Length: 298
Image (cartoon, rainbow, N blue to C red):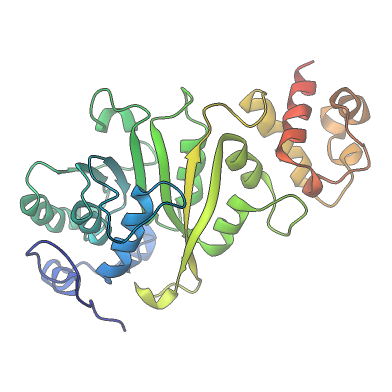
């Protein structure tokens, strides 16, 4: 099991293993918790969260001046990294009250720069926790619990108004979920999540994380994904109609559109969208799904 290796932090806080032991913070499977102890790895994630895509530099402080919204900080490995890399403010939302004393120690080490909110990120409203006038300026950074990661991403992709409160989201998912987010048409992982994510954002996998980096180690590889919201969706259509189209289409992804979309209008709908009724959903680009959503409204 890998130990923290120098350099680990710019603060005087103890190693994370010691923090875990002091506060008896065994990871809870029911909360989807897997802790990262390697502070060099968490700082790599933090740097990815701050730098514009393709513009990272280990010598820079890419987080300087930024406001970061973190979900599920646990004992605070990524929280410490965000602050050490120069985040002006971190708002950390944690539902596990056992973690609050450890996070309070980090807040004391970085006066005025860490605010901890004890809440469930799935049901809480981000605007209530964020500073005034921060809409569109916030970076989300999180080692998301596996059991709610996809649901939280969908929440952030479907929120109103749009553009959203965040200007980037750097998130950890199971690798298979990450592949679904970035998948291209005609590939194995392309589906409803791919269409929604790419309709409203650009997305790329930054790097993978080995299971042995975690305690306890999960049974799957993880991936860090960075998303940046589009100012406007890739193609115009109503969100609710896009969701109806993709639910029907990918519910029978191997069938032709004329069959999978039959409950929504079948060939007449497809003709209004100007598409081939023999095409299969897994081969359609995002813009074609938007065309089907517009046709559904006609």
